[in-house]
Image (cartoon, rainbow, N blue to C red; front, side):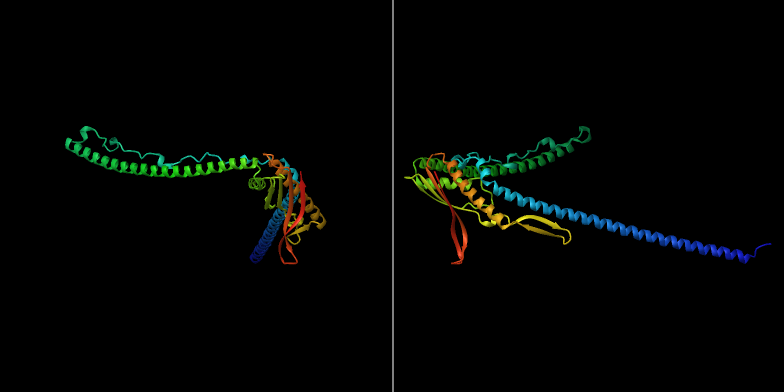
Length: 330
């Protein structure tokens, strides 16, 4: 029994509808997967960015902590490190007579002069008649003459500039050399005055020794006032000591991911005070060591060092000099 055409068409239409529904479902599933993939990718990127940020901040906290620890270690080892340094000598103040050599730069090179061959027309004799050849030679010679005159003028100007620059350098070199020799001559006179027990020379020399010393970190002050007694061969020195703030208030730095901020771990006050007292003692002893090590002329029999700080005076409301320690040494 044959099937009616209407039934075939209905089956076909139903198949098409189901196929379209399947495509819609597949498309929606693909879109859902794409959205999920993008969401996962974004989350991964955010996690990676957060991880990188956290690692960077943690590294910064560790570096800050390391700098603090290095500062504290430098304060603890001030005396040991200072004693390892070379003793100051008056020769360290001497200046070299070797000056920067004369360097004229481009003026040292002469202007290249033209050659007639550069202007002569390279052509065979049969290509030009005698009249044309003579005309070409005259034009070439005229161009050569013009170029030679221009080069000669430029060379003359170069020589004038070179002479002027040389004279300027010679004047500068003479002034520099005179200054160097005067300075070194002054050092010779200073050494002679030191050997003779001159008080002013002794103050100048030992003050320079402390100012020039590499034993003191940049964070520590170097203010000094001195007086020398030739009869007693004694140097009395007022030396500025570092303030309490030189000891780091922080012990460490910790990064807190929850707030994305650094937490400063404070150093206990008792520890800071202990470090500060130790630093003051080291500073006083190092000053004495630096003075005796620098005494290459044997003018010191004794030294008195007064260590002071400029502190706020509550009574007057002004800065006042407070002596924290006095060390006599023989």
